[in-house]
Amino acid sequence: MSHSQLDMLSDLARQARDQAGQTLAQERQAEQQTTAQLDALKRYRAEYSARFQAAMREGIDPASMYNYQQFLASLDTALERARQALNEQQQRVAKSQTQWRQQQRALSSYDTLTERRLRQAQQRQGRQEQKHNDDLVNSRTARRLSEASY
Image (cartoon, rainbow, N blue to C red):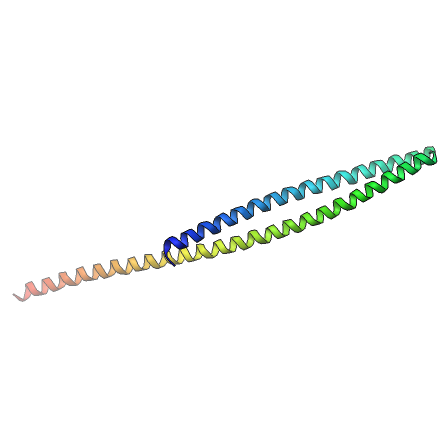
């Protein structure tokens, strides 16, 4: 694999990782919103239940009691849906997190290959410089020896 191909793969992996990160951030934000909605529903249900209890203590007609009970039942249904939505959103967050980790591992692999190639190139260059220096020293030594033998 050529250097440019590895760079291209690394760039693509970085873009995929960044996209997965953006998706993860969006999913986490949606999870926070869903949690806030669930919490608001819980608070509202508790407040409405307290009003119902107060109305029961003060005396309430059967029609009003039925209305309170029906509304509380609809709030319970809404709470169940909100819990289910939160659970589904948490699963999406977990899936996005897994995808981000996979993309990060792929990018790390390409980065490791790039670093290895760079080290190998530096080692080759170092060996070439050493060989060049050795050749210079050897030619100087040979020249001195040939000059000394005349």
